[in-house]
Image 1 (spheres, each protein chain N blue to C red):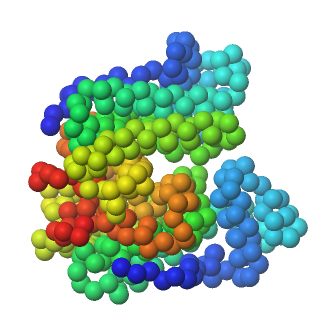
Image 2 (cartoon, helix red, strand yellow; image 1 turned 135 degrees about the vertical axis):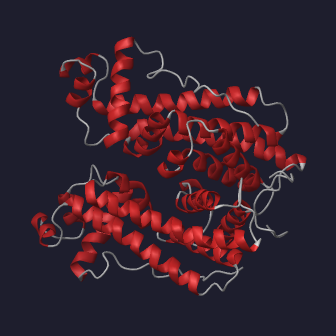
Length: 216
Length: 216
């Protein structure tokens, strides 16, 4: 297996944002990543991108709204990019699963700050925003459920417990979680987008799915 | 494999706490679980346990200190109880690993609110408290690394990638993470402390470790 040696373009935040909105978003991601969204102030965000404090409100109604937009857009970008990965991965469920895992691991490692903010701070969202992001997270898990069920039907996978939808959903949730919750110390041990890190996670995912391959 | 049909005693919070401290802790866990620690106020916690607002400060110096004590103590209890599980699990690394996973899954499901608060809200801690809890989390991962390395040396496990400490640490982090980050929907699908849920996670862990067993 090989991987692109160049870090891919993970997509600008926010989706469809103006240059100034992107500057605000970049500064916010840095601060939210380093210190968490709760203690970070609007003043710190605007100072970090050379704007007056009030300028943020021309673009986002509040810090909470900015956080919501960033988290939502990271999830949307990941969903879209996984869909692209599935489209180019052929029809073998094991190859699809491995490719999806390699992508998600490369995103967690390569777009580390965006990924951490999206996967750590989303619990701060409330109301409709929380519901929307939970649905987006479920959508990503469902993307994994597809190849797992297809593989179970084709005899390519033997899912843990029983070869049913319940097992596919549990395995999908476990695999997508493990790809986004990679510990800081693991990320530090592997170079950016390391093919070896992707290999190890692909092996772990295929093992979880019960792939019938000696290479696993 | 069997499991105790009664929910085990997960330990009182805080460790060594007075009855009134335990009442405050119980109320805080409920609120932190339901709404997150950030929006929860001291007044809401004291109201929930029938105390005057100021009464909390006789026992904890602040809401943040209470949060720290709760998160620290859940981690300490889990570490202690895993140590107990290891001691009664014999010398086979696969049996040890399966028993540790069964325990951690039963904790995540059975002590759901404590577990969620500890594993979701710990990112809010700062300074020395954050460092201390990070060390406790590393200690739990290290408890998993032990049997994985022992199994790799004995030929019981074929770890993902290579049979080395790096692979053991990666697998340990993945297994301990998957046992504490069980999705709400999965927990809702299985009864409290369900042996079947424990079975599935034990199977997944043994697969990740590359256990040489047909039952896996």
